Amino acid sequence: MSKRPPMPGIKGQQRRPKTISPRLKEMLRVDHAGEYGAVAIYKGQQAVFGKNYKTREIAAKLAEMEAEEQHHLDAFDDLLNEHKVRPTALAPIWNVAGFGLGVVTALMGEKAAHACTEAVETVIEKHYADQIDELEGDAEHAALRERFIQFREDELHHRDVAIEEGAKEAPGYGVLSRVIKAGCHAAIRVSEKI
Image 1 (cartoon, rainbow, N blue to C red):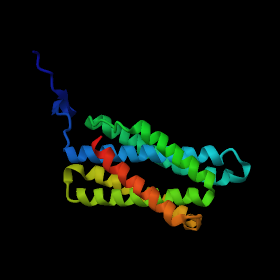
Image 2 (image 1 turned 180 degrees about the horizontal axis):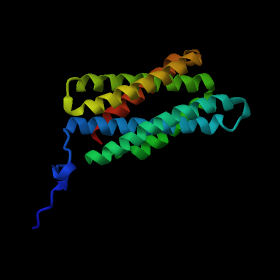
Image 3 (image 1 turned 30 degrees about the vertical axis):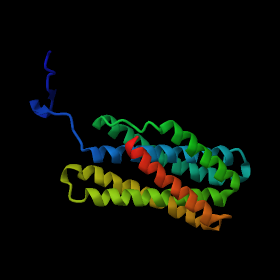
């Protein structure tokens, strides 16, 4: 059995592959899944709104938010690869569910689509806030914590835009919001493990 040569580092120093805790692996896995689902939701909403000239303005706003979520997803793709963390096995389900949620809420109207964004982003923002708190004082993962802070700010912005655009005026807002938030919480718990 041959021994694998050490990875070269800067100026001839040896570099070891980074190892991370099981908890950090869970964080990265679930955050990746969340961003994956968010991209799918925005794509579903744009599939409805982008076909109608009367709703092209909302489609353009959704495209901007999707681009930010795609940026987050790309960052988590890199982090999963860097740390050898497998993505959730449920990604295909989150893709279909997210796209479907986007289509359904868009078909319900612009305010319902915004209510979906507000509900999802409220849960995700709180999730990032909890992770930021958990990593406070962890010098080894300070850069990751800073990334979570930036991504949380983006999610807050998306939530605030949705509220400004009338999310809370959607028909059945209370029920719609509760159902979407419950689904997000369930997806977080499942994606951490599977």
